[in-house]
Amino acid sequence: MGKSSKDKRDAYYRLAKEQGWRARSAFKLLQLDEEFDLFKDVTRVVDLCAAPGSWSQVLSRVLIKGEKFGRRAWEDENAKSWQLLRGVFGTGVKQGDIQERELEAEQKLEPRKDVKIVAIDLQPMSPLAGIITLKADITHPATVPLLLRALDPTYDPSSKSQHASHPVDLVLSDGAPDVTGLHDLDIYVQSQLLFAALNLTLCVLRPGGKFVAKIFRGRNVDLLYSQLSIFFEQVMVAKPRSSRASSVEAFIVCLNFQPPEGFKASLEEPMGIGNRLEKMVAAKAERHPIVAPITLQAAANGTWSAAPAKPLVKGNDGVVELSLPEEESDAWKSGRWIAPFMACGDLSGFDADASYHLPKDRITLDPVQPPTAPPYKRALEMRKAAGGAYGKTSLA
Image 1 (tube, helix red, strand yellow):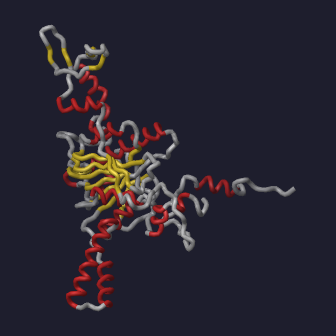
Image 2 (cartoon, rainbow, N blue to C red; image 1 turned 90 degrees about the horizontal axis):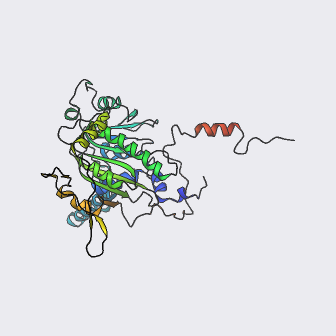
Image 3 (cartoon, rainbow, N blue to C red; image 1 turned 45 degrees about the horizontal axis):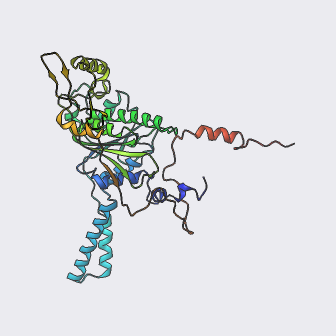
């Protein structure tokens, strides 16, 4: 990769290395937290698809170390500056004392108590301070007991009350498949990954908890929004400023987990129904007779159009008419649900799609955390053994 390539000139790529982040995706989580206050009253967090660990690094520095970033850091710094100025003009403090107070304010952190953070990924991840790392498959039922054991070493797998005794406040998922360039296929694979993350989340998230996951925006975002609204009070689609606008990437933010009454989550029976889905659909179809769609012809111009369904009424002649609930009539008119969309981050800040000029006195920084087991490692070794990209040269 050239020294003046697009990645090198990406502002967030350089800022991540300057500020010690493992990847530029750390800014995405910071901007989401700045907009939705994700870390409020949070002490137990699960980071799914965590490698290389930039989101876990954010959790470690914010929850365990007590550091502040973005708008909160600016507000704290501004408030401390005003306090120092009031002290100077009120008591005649010297300049040297001001500098000492500033150092004390910078060194004063606010770590939280009893913080438990578990990072899960199939790929190996370099260790982080205070982070419990599990190399596991989020689609396998055995992962839930491992996760609960990591949160509480005294966990008994035979216990059935997982939610009451082992609640998780926040579940994050920044996982994405290796894209192929075929958008429909990529969106489908990503939706299946999101489905697996949601199933695990429903098993461990406490009522009132939060869930954030990466999605690929497609034609069925409104369907995803309506499905997640069954479990969460608020569902929004967010696009952080550090996420390139040219990318279909976005994040679904779900707040205030409210499971339906009688719902029991399990990875063996996804979404609480498992293999009973076909039977449930067949039973529902038997209860509702199939009728032909109703069309109306306008008297003015003679055009035909579909008519809204009427209430379910069985007359004396045995004819049954199906209906939509009254609260869904507006959705029928518009034809779709519209998911709330929100842009996160300072809109006057850096543009993730823009390429900025490199300063002349710039120093090239190495990655904070090189890949532990890159998938292309074997290919590089084979190329090196062959003598490089063009093979070994032979002398005539």
